[in-house]
Image (cartoon, rainbow, N blue to C red; front, side, top):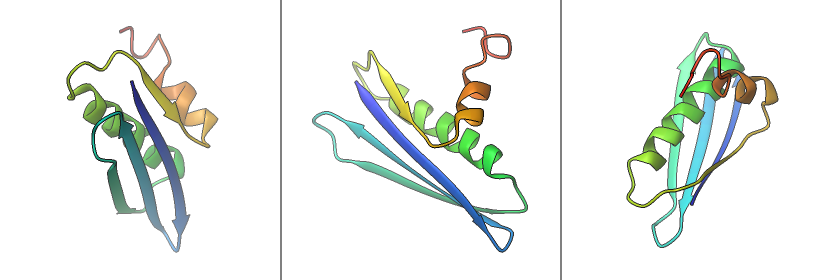
Length: 85
Protein backbone atom coordinates (compact mmCIF):
# COMPACT_ATOMS: atom_id res chain seq x y z
CA UNK A 1 0.00 0.00 0.00
CA UNK A 2 1.20 3.52 -0.78
CA UNK A 3 -0.04 6.71 0.88
CA UNK A 4 0.31 9.98 -1.05
CA UNK A 5 -0.22 13.29 0.78
CA UNK A 6 -0.34 16.48 -1.34
CA UNK A 7 -0.81 20.16 -0.66
CA UNK A 8 -0.42 23.30 -2.77
CA UNK A 9 -0.39 27.02 -2.18
CA UNK A 10 0.01 30.16 -4.28
CA UNK A 11 1.68 33.39 -3.16
CA UNK A 12 2.77 36.27 -5.41
CA UNK A 13 1.91 34.25 -8.57
CA UNK A 14 4.28 31.43 -7.53
CA UNK A 15 2.69 28.03 -6.84
CA UNK A 16 4.36 25.55 -4.52
CA UNK A 17 3.20 21.97 -4.30
CA UNK A 18 4.56 19.41 -1.86
CA UNK A 19 3.90 15.67 -2.09
CA UNK A 20 4.96 12.97 0.34
CA UNK A 21 4.78 9.29 -0.60
CA UNK A 22 4.96 6.68 2.13
CA UNK A 23 5.45 3.03 1.20
CA UNK A 24 6.05 0.45 3.90
CA UNK A 25 9.73 -0.60 4.17
CA UNK A 26 10.85 2.24 1.86
CA UNK A 27 12.26 5.67 2.75
CA UNK A 28 9.75 8.53 2.65
CA UNK A 29 9.71 10.26 -0.75
CA UNK A 30 9.26 14.05 -0.73
CA UNK A 31 8.70 16.02 -3.92
CA UNK A 32 8.50 19.83 -4.11
CA UNK A 33 7.33 21.64 -7.23
CA UNK A 34 7.55 25.36 -8.01
CA UNK A 35 5.82 27.03 -10.92
CA UNK A 36 4.49 30.45 -11.90
CA UNK A 37 1.14 31.64 -13.23
CA UNK A 38 -0.82 28.44 -12.60
CA UNK A 39 -3.93 27.71 -10.56
CA UNK A 40 -3.81 25.74 -7.34
CA UNK A 41 -6.10 23.09 -8.85
CA UNK A 42 -3.67 22.49 -11.72
CA UNK A 43 -0.77 22.21 -9.26
CA UNK A 44 -2.72 19.73 -7.12
CA UNK A 45 -3.60 17.66 -10.20
CA UNK A 46 0.04 17.55 -11.28
CA UNK A 47 1.23 16.59 -7.79
CA UNK A 48 -1.39 13.82 -7.48
CA UNK A 49 -0.65 12.39 -10.92
CA UNK A 50 3.10 12.46 -10.35
CA UNK A 51 2.73 10.93 -6.89
CA UNK A 52 0.51 8.15 -8.23
CA UNK A 53 2.99 7.53 -11.04
CA UNK A 54 5.87 7.29 -8.54
CA UNK A 55 3.89 4.90 -6.33
CA UNK A 56 2.95 2.69 -9.30
CA UNK A 57 6.59 2.35 -10.28
CA UNK A 58 7.34 0.50 -7.02
CA UNK A 59 6.96 -3.27 -6.75
CA UNK A 60 3.99 -4.97 -5.10
CA UNK A 61 1.73 -1.92 -4.70
CA UNK A 62 -1.90 -3.06 -4.53
CA UNK A 63 -3.53 0.06 -3.03
CA UNK A 64 -2.84 3.76 -3.31
CA UNK A 65 -4.42 6.21 -0.88
CA UNK A 66 -4.38 9.88 -1.91
CA UNK A 67 -4.84 12.51 0.80
CA UNK A 68 -5.38 16.10 -0.33
CA UNK A 69 -7.20 19.21 0.77
CA UNK A 70 -8.48 19.87 -2.76
CA UNK A 71 -11.72 17.90 -3.28
CA UNK A 72 -12.26 19.55 -6.70
CA UNK A 73 -8.86 18.34 -7.95
CA UNK A 74 -9.40 14.84 -6.59
CA UNK A 75 -12.79 14.59 -8.32
CA UNK A 76 -11.23 15.80 -11.57
CA UNK A 77 -8.34 13.31 -11.55
CA UNK A 78 -10.59 10.36 -10.66
CA UNK A 79 -13.39 11.23 -13.12
CA UNK A 80 -14.18 7.96 -14.90
CA UNK A 81 -15.41 9.78 -18.03
CA UNK A 82 -12.03 11.48 -18.51
CA UNK A 83 -9.91 8.49 -17.42
CA UNK A 84 -11.80 5.25 -18.08
CA UNK A 85 -9.09 3.08 -16.50
